[in-house]
Image (cartoon, rainbow, N blue to C red; front, side, top):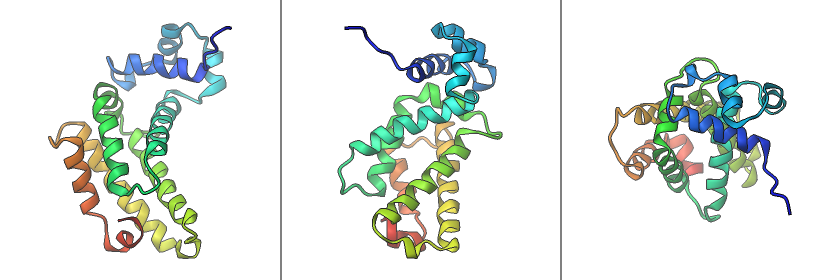
Length: 181
């Protein structure tokens, strides 16, 4: 039986290998494809650019981590498992975190986490509670988490992943704590 390898996974592994050793801005699509023996055409069949690939990697890995948590998971469990994952992959996340312009990891995290929180409300049949004001509060809170996470990745905070996660969760606004604590 032949081993079937997912092309996206091969490209992701190549990108991660390169990003552990060099800053995101220095990595070219050619570097990614040459590193794994794929063509540029193949790359563009799957991803718009290296930022799309970077964000796909984060989403893929975080989705798997969150799916493994029990249904009784809370915000701290979710944040702690994500922080542990980033900590274990520090070289990769440190290098991609330096990029702060359009399509940055931080921007992706804001959109991803905001939708994740809104989906949690929808799954609990709280659709009527999702007002424009609540969406704004979620995005504001998630933006602050993404910013603090970025500072933590850069080493401005020295806490271990669990302590960092606790600080983040302890600072949820009252308006959101009703739904997410």
